[in-house]
Length: 287
View 1 (cartoon, rainbow, N blue to C red):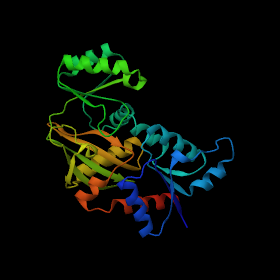
View 2 (cartoon, rainbow, N blue to C red):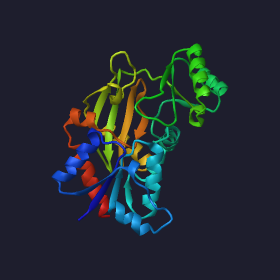
View 3 (cartoon, rainbow, N blue to C red):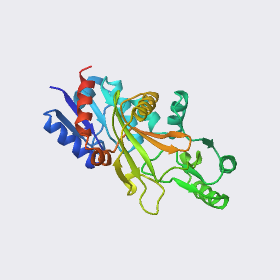
View 4 (cartoon, helix red, strand yellow):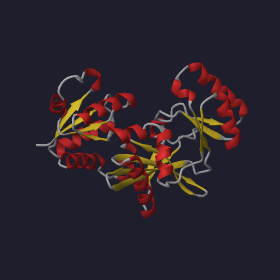
């Protein structure tokens, strides 16, 4: 029997749905909380493989914790969803942009600076309003809508005082004139399986469901599916959420998420996403 390990440092609605789907499908699912384990990386790799089963679904919220676990498991010969290279790229907005740009996937205009002075020059180039994001982060945290130079200076001064090396990399993006929503498309392997609109909550311009955004049905057209598959292929494929914006010049991809929260998609589309993910994991284990 195929054994799948579900590695998660927090059990949210999504992890519970995967556990229930595996139970309904009679798939052996081993739940592993990485906060309470250690891995011997100086011993035999077979021991590691025996502990984690045939394939691992890595859903660590911690980007760096997940990366290290995935690197170890892949070296031991396990299939991991998502693979190390995919997780590395998707967890860093700059790496994601580079992969999308190389593949010809349309993205918003984005500038990168490495000092506060450089960030101010980038903002002058891109114009106000603009969006400033951390290169690593999720749920819309530390993303700022920069409306003018005074607010830019205040944000930059705050980031300089935090003394976090990652916050000294300034990711500056054009503010796209879009409806108060974005589009999330879920890709599993070589299939775009569901799409939803994510509407901004009241008094917020961000659409993250974790911040109160609301998911509504979105028809998954051939064009949307093709764009999502191109974006997923660009970062290496797997179980991925491709987030898009409707701009005056067409659909732009602004993020590819490698640790997908799919509660909103499930409620909006009625697609059995947990079952599809478990089915994909079983297929990966049998390759």
